[in-house]
Structures are given as structure tokens and as C-alpha cells.
Image 1 (cartoon, helix red, strand yellow):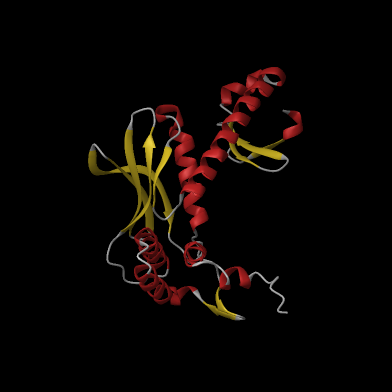
Image 2 (spheres, rainbow, N blue to C red):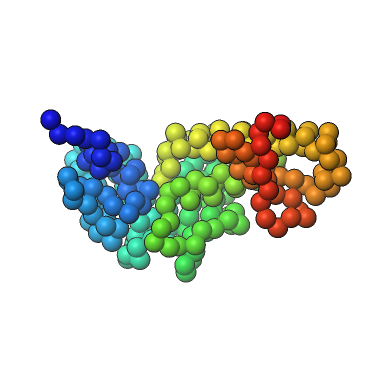
Length: 233
């Protein structure tokens, strides 16, 4: 019996959608057979073949996902693309009752985050971006959206999922869960300083990341990142 403990089997045995999701993560190696892999500059052709399969299956939702992944990888690997943006996802802004679509638009060597609303189709600059490089992955996009939603939740609340693009519903709600956890620890952090060092509250301590045993935060006085044990909170 073949030992399938090697990570390559996760690629080989994945469903068609699973393979597309793996490619969206831009791994260094994408296995197409036992000990046979495709490097990053050859994956557009693989996605073209997957698009044909999805069309034959009449899975048009997957077809759209493949097109978004193909464009995203095209940006990273400097392939010619037929458009300059990638559709990320659509959300419902609960506070304002509008649907918002998010895009990454290529501008020189930068992918800038833009949004459109169902009430206004013009692109709105979200003032968030990623620099294009060989190692850019979907994880970077997830972190970009996480920071954006976390920043704007005060004004618009947390959104709800509406439509899949490069990111799916599961990935979207993973972002929301992280934001809720950060929000919870933000309250605990402020409470901790109020009890122990209230003079530091004037420096606006803000949670940046929650790890297994620590929270990472920053203050306007400090240019780096500070850490605090969860046990202290």
C-alpha cells in the first residue's frame, strides 16, 4: 500500500475545487503527480485545463473562481492578463444595508484594494495595498482584508458574506472570527492598563495580533510591537 503521508498527496487527491484553492495560495510547489510538481510560472496553463473541466461539469461558480485565481497568479508571475483587477468577494454592510464588492486592482507593482457599492458602481479607494512579489499568496489578501474590516468596523459594523470571488465564505468568516477575537482582547487590554498603568492609555494601545499565548499590540509612543501574556489579562 502506498504511503500517502507526504503533503504532495493533499494536492494530488484534492477535488477540482480543492486544487484551485491550493493554487490560489501560490505554493512554491504544486504537485500534479507523485514527485512531479509545477513551479509558479507554469500554472496558468494548468488553470486553463481546470477551466475546461469546470465548464464541462457546468459548474459556473467554479469557472468564475478559476478565472479570479488565474488573474491573481498572472499578476504575481507577470503573465499577460485580460483585465487589471481581481474580484475578492461581496459582502453586505449590515449597518448601511448595502452590498459591497471588493477588488484588488493592479497599478504598476502594487495591488490596491477597491470597493464598489450596489448604489454606486464607481471604484472607491480603500487605502490599502499589497506589493506584488513572487511570494505573494492568498494569505496576504486575507490579512489585508482583516486589517481593513477591523479598522472600519467602528463606522460600518462587521459585514456579512454575500458572494464568493477569490475568497470563499469559510475564509471570510475566519476573518470575522479573528476580528471578534481581537476586539475582545482590545477590551481586556484597555481594562488591564486602566488597573495597572492608566497613564499609558493616552498612548492609545491597540491590539495588532492574537497568538497562542500572547497578544501583540502597539502604542502611538512606541514604533515597534509590544507583547503581553494572555495570563495577565
